Every structure is written in structure tokens, then in C-alpha cells.
Amino acid sequence: MTRSRMYRDGRLVAEDFPDEDLARYLDDPDAVVWVDLAQPSGDDLAMLADKLGLHDLAVRDAVRAHQRPRLNHYQGHALVITYVAVVNPKSGVLHAHELAIFVTEHALITVRKDDGIDPGQFTDRWDNQSELAGSGVGFLLYGVLDEVVNAHLDALQVLDDHAESLEEAVFTESPTSTTMQRRMLRMHKSLGQLRRKVVPMEPVLNSLMRRDTTVYDQRMVPYYQDALDHVLYAADQIESLRDLIATIRDTQLNLQGNRLNLIMKKVTSWAAIIAVPTLITGFYGQNLPLPGVNTPWGAWVSTVSLVLVSVLLYGSFKRKDWL
Image (cartoon, rainbow, N blue to C red; front, top):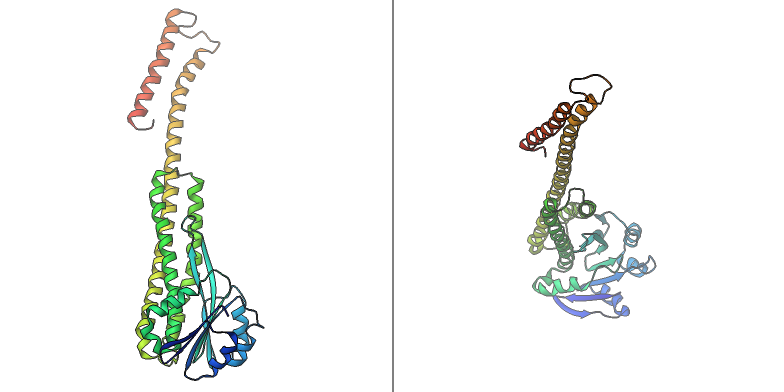
């Protein structure tokens, strides 16, 4: 155990108690117990599994990493798999930290798969809403899930800030900038990862809010509904940001196409300007008795023609905005 708490009659009675007190508290029908475990093995969970009657499949899923977010019901308990998402503000890279939650009638067990989750954020939430502690395990579970959902919203806000910076950069940076392309790819990847963590939370909360559930009392219904609303909002925002990134990418491709067209117009225009003098000099360079060959006036006519036609072509292309 890294952290632990015991509530009785809606009041915090013991905190971070020694391991030998855990079995006694679990046997107390009036006690509500929270235990946090960090990277436990199956053997570490053996005592709790035996005491709480945890299913073998639930224990196995709780210690295995990379599980799909979900809610599984077993006889006498449930297992919730969820993720706390954190986005690096500078790089926009998302890191998802897995959390397994055993839910029983009088106990809540959180199993952290790595050190990326601070259990102190759960205790702070419970302390800030201590008036709800009388709802027992339902109160504890809500505090954990709401912190998870809030982490999703925080990650989404960071990604939204990155999307805004990309919107501004698409017209200020070069359309061929590899740095911007990498940022968009990282953004797209992070949004995809966040979507896979957020969207499954909707059926999890919907399942918890079924009328036949015994996890919480009616006082906690609005709070679970509020968490569900935040999940739905986050899912909608993720889809909006995915569409925005696709739009930014399309805009960048259009800018690249426009730039290519402009370059092609300039190259074609200069090629046309160069082609006419080449034609005249090539024509007079033939070994034939053409008018003006080997005469001063023929040299002047060809030279003036070269300059005049080139200037006329340049002016015409300039008026058409080809140059």
C-alpha cells in the first residue's frame, strides 16, 4: 500500500494506516476503506483478492498493462479500467497512465500501473467534498473518476492551445515546413490516443448510473451525471479538434499547390520570354540567304526585335500577374 484511508459514518477515521490494520478494517461492516497500490503483482493482490472475493480475471486484468478502458461486473464487486491523460505543453505528446479500480460494497482499491498518477489528487478531491463522504464507496469512486475526467479536459485544453498555434502558423510559416508537418502529425496522434481513452468512459459511466446499481446512493446521481456530461463534452471537442487538424492540413496542402502553380507560371513566363529571342537568333543563324544577312541593317533589325519582343512579353506577363 502507498496510501490508505478508512471512513466511518461519513468521517475520516484513519489514514495511511499500517498493513496489519487493513484486514481488521475490511472486516468492519461500518467502515469504508480505500487502498492505493502501485505496480502490484498478482501475489501482492492475493490477500485482498481472498478477503474481498475478487475474481481471478479481475485480478489478472488489474496487474496487466495496456487494458481497454471498461467496466466489468463480477459477483460482489466490479472492476473499472481507465486512464489519466497528461499532455506535454511544449511538445504536445500525450502520455496515458493506466488505473484499475476495484469497487466493492465497503472498499475501493486503486491499482496504478506506473508512477504517472499521484494518489494525492484523489485525497484532495475527497477532502474538498467531505460533506459527501456519507455516501461511502460511491463518493470515493466519484472522486477518482472525476479526477480522471478532469485530467482528460486538461489534456484537451493543452491540445486546443496547440491547435490554435497551428492555425496561426499555417499562414506565417512556409507551406513546406517539415517542423509544422511534424507538429500536426504529433497532434493527430495525441488526439487519436486521447479519443481511445475518453470515448469508452461514456459506457462506463452510463453503466454505473443504471437504476439497479448499488455502488452509490441517490445523492450521488447528479455528480455522476456531471462527470458523464464532461465526458460527452470532451468527446465532442476531440472530434472538433480532429476536424480542425484535417482542415489545417488541407489548407497547408492548398497553399503548397498554390505556391507550385505560382512557380510554374513564373518558370513558364520566363521560358516564353527566352524562347522568342532564341527563335529569332536560331532563324537568322541558318546557313541560308535570308533578308538582311551579312548587312548592318539586318543586324540592327534582329537586335531590336529581340529586345522589343522580350520587353513586350515581360510587360504582358506582368499585367497578368504571371511574374
